[in-house]
View 1 (cartoon, one colour):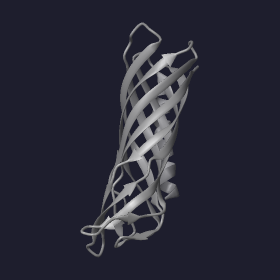
View 2 (cartoon, rainbow, N blue to C red):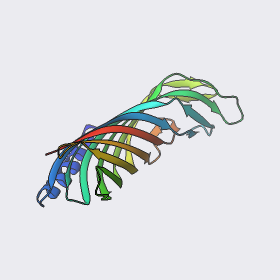
View 3 (spheres, rainbow, N blue to C red):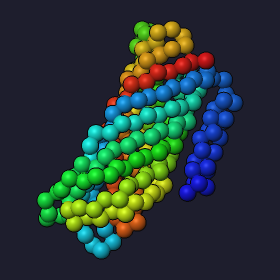
View 4 (cartoon, rainbow, N blue to C red):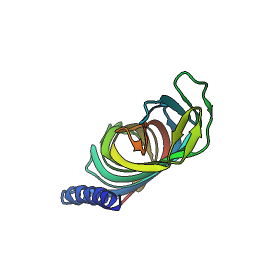
Length: 205
C-alpha cells in the first residue's frame, strides 16, 4: 500500500515538474465542503447481495498548479469521509448502520477557464488518478463488511466559478463528481461515486 501511494505522489510531481518547464504562473488552492456519497450496491463472496446508504459527509482538498492563461494543470490531494446510514441485504429491510467510508485521492487535474472580462471566471475541468478507499467494520441487515482498504483508479468532473479580489487572491465555488473503480473490502465488493460542493480559495504567485 505504501509503495502504491508513493508511486501516485511521484506521478503527480512528475506532471507538475513537466508543466513547470513551460512558462506558467504557479498557484495554490484549497477547498472545503459537503460530500454526498451515492448508495452503493454490495456483493459478498458468499453470494449475498445488498446495498448501503450514507450520511452527508465532508471533504477537503489541496492542490499545487500552473496557470497558462485559459488552461490550468495541477496535482491534487484530497480527503473525504461519509458515515454509513443504513445497510441491508436484498429482500430485507435496511437497518441503521455505524461506521464510515473514507477516501484519500491523488489526482492530476486540467481546467479550461472561460474569460468574461469581469472578476468572475467560470471554468470546467476533470482529473484522473488514484483513490485509497477504506471501510470500517459493519454488521447488520444480513450484511457483514470487514474493515479493509484498497487503492483503485479514480476520476472526476469539475465545474465552477472563481471571483478575483486582486491578482493574488481568488474565491471559488465548484461542483465535483468523483468516481472510482469498484473497491473490494475483504469479502465485499462495493462502489464509490459522490457529488461534492466545495468552497475554496486560490493564491496566485
